Length: 230
Image 1 (cartoon, rainbow, N blue to C red):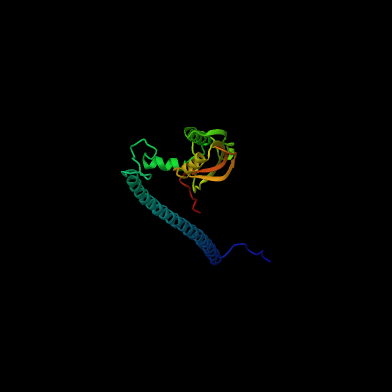
Image 2 (cartoon, rainbow, N blue to C red):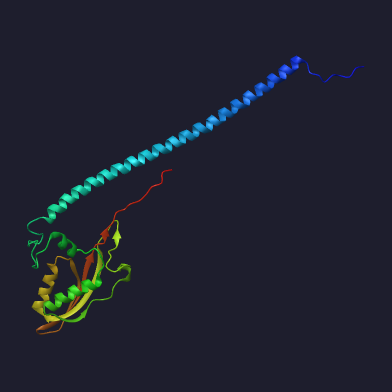
């Protein structure tokens, strides 16, 4: 009996070749479909990202335009406010009297932008000495939490609110002069609030222990931030 032959017929070889070609074609098609799916997904994600970036940039541009318009309007208002012939106190902007001075300086003196306890103490002490008051005690202690790390440099915040500065002192003077001092504090361009008032003594001179409070307003800073678009 003859041994079986391993030789494939020509027809069988053609079929194998066709199957191999089909397998390669199907594999290539599957690869193309899968790759296209990932590519389309990446393109959609990239397109969404660019659209979000464009939206954020448009919002930033709108905000920038609004801020620019606000700056121009503020500059006009400031120029008009500073150029008035009579200041807010009714004095001469170019004069040197008690009610004189330009409006910008008056506003800054009314509510300083920094916690300057020594400057405040010097001003009140001069006021009392010029008024002829006998000072027996003046000032308290500075608040370390409100002191700037760099002397003479104002602390800048985004949403400032008036900060309280307590300043007690004790003087000896006549009843009339004590009343005049309270009236002077009340009419001051800088806000003063008398929290406590204790009078002691008899006759012409009275010892007045005054618990005084004043304020400062931290400088306003720009809130500049960046945003990461994801």
